Length: 240
Image (cartoon, rainbow, N blue to C red; front, top):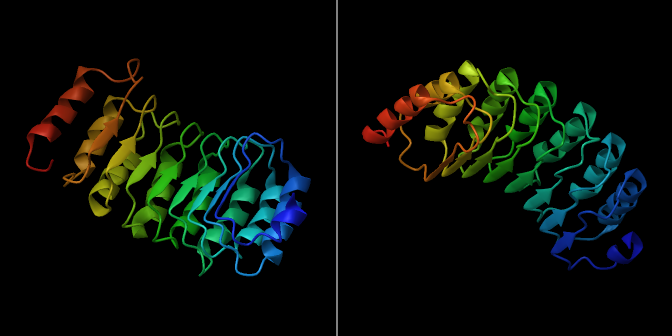
């Protein structure tokens, strides 16, 4: 497949999810993309495979050659660690990168991993949608992420559901500040926030006039009337 792909630079979308692709497959795909002349690839979905750090490093070598790439799906590749995210970060920092949608849902990402990713995101002003749900990101990681997203003024959707953000005070406050600084329209925090975190999020939102969707589902064991009261005060204020 990789050899045939090399002869098809006109392809705009490539969907390879759930195809049992591992390190060798990534090396072959990366080499094919790297060898293409002016590839037109805009969307690559390679989620739900067996990609590890070395495989991602090889794939990035080819993706750097894809100057039209706007959507990259790497979700549910749980063998990726901090080393692999460092390779991905080099792609995000390349001058030719114009990614708008990045999906890293359920990649076993922790605080150290998201800090490495944030360094790349800081050089990606084109980003509009980021999915980091179902990971192991805590307060420290959230602070690093918000710092990296500070230049992403076009950001519209951020998915952080099912992480480890319970009791995340400083991180949630900084996230609230990010909402008002960017073009954020949808924020997903299902099953990951409690009263303290919600209060800090609200405190950080000096203005959330652009926010259209706030997902707080499945927080029934950690969020009470206290947290909802702070949210209610935001909705009644002129900030919203």
